[in-house]
Image (cartoon, rainbow, N blue to C red):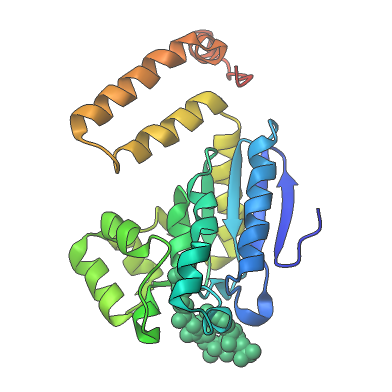
Amino acid sequence: MAYDNILVETNGHVGVITLHRPKALNALNGALIAELGTALDGFEADPGIGCLVLTGSERAFAAGADIREMQPLTFPGTYTDDFLTSWDRLARCRKPVVAAVAGYALGGGCELAMMCDIILAADNARFGQPEIQLGILPGAGGSQRLTRAIGKAKAMEMCLTGRTLTAEEADRYGLVSRVVPLAELQAEAMKVADTIANLSLPSVVMAKESVNRAFETTLAEGIRFERRLFQALFATADQKEGMAAFVEKRSASFNNA
Ligand code: HXC
């Protein structure tokens, strides 16, 4: 499959997707989002892939949805086409996705990063929801995911003023899992993704689903959900292998079964 707006490669058991519209700071147009969906479908269907990395350039993860493309849109058109529905594909990904963010992650770029499961930030990363300065608001989950991630006060200031966060602030507020020097970002992201990709895929997919359930339900229901998945994993050969390997003091070799 040939892509015009992203680069797609496989590195061992890790699928890597690089946003690639360098002249527009990876502004997210419809074509790019469609290509991203196709690439995600491919990696999800590939049994050899256990984890994904989503990244951009050193200057920009993505500077937002493409403003030039959005400029002529109308309410009847966006409503009829259900504009932005295709963005949900990333959030529906069952395999884990590590976002490796350098430079600008603004508007839809920040929203895309927040749809991922782990955000690693380079020390030059900048996170923001500047839509309010364009007369709109975050439309791909930003007002919801940002608020859950960093709380109302900080999310409100960002969404109402467009203030951007430095990588250090994003780390302190809990938006990212950690900050690394720019030169080490890609290697660190690969290391994290490779670690995940070499674990038992059923347990990894269930762990992701269980953590995400915390955002959707009550504590009692979430704990019940987690317990059922935990019990289910005792039906897998990988549970037998993982525990046998511990007892026999060797590394486990999982078969995703
Ligand atoms: C279209 C964009 C773009 C965007 C940058 N570019 N961001 N094009 N949509 N979101 C283009 C510029 O027009 C320019 O193209 C080129 O990328 C380089 O950008 P510059 O502005 O020249 O770079 P710089 O001066 O370094 O400023 C960087 C910047 C600025 C601070 C990131 O580009 C900026 O403010 N961009 C917009 C950020 C933003 O408002 N994002 C939210 C978008 S709304 P040319 O051809 O002129 O050289 C959004 C909605 C989400 O995301 C909800 C729905 C998903």
